[in-house]
Image 1 (cartoon, rainbow, N blue to C red):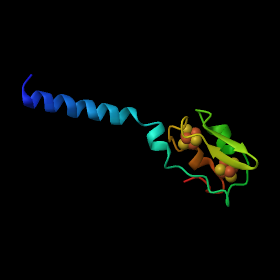
Image 2 (cartoon, protein in one colour):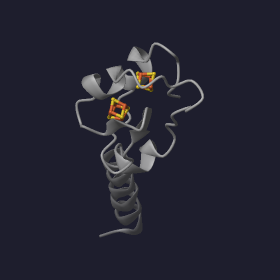
Image 3 (spheres, helix red, strand yellow):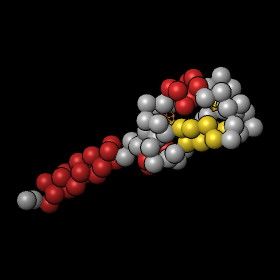
Length: 82
Ligand code: SF4
Ligand code: SF4
């Protein structure tokens, strides 16, 4: 394997790993603003990964399950998730 081929191989591998991280790594960025959340549960109903749950009146996101699909962000009537 030439040096160029190795470079290309590892660059492609890096891109694949990055793409595979769509879930947990990216998730940490979503936040529930508890001052806005009214606990309506619409986010919970729409989440395809069971990654968000209303607990004691506030939505809580499980970063280990969230794939950052943004469906909860779009459905929230209070704009509490961003
Ligand atoms: S949809 Fe919005 S207001 Fe309703 S529980 Fe989820 S975060 Fe809270
Ligand atoms: S971003 Fe998608 S996967 Fe994550 S909690 Fe919201 S609806 Fe669920």
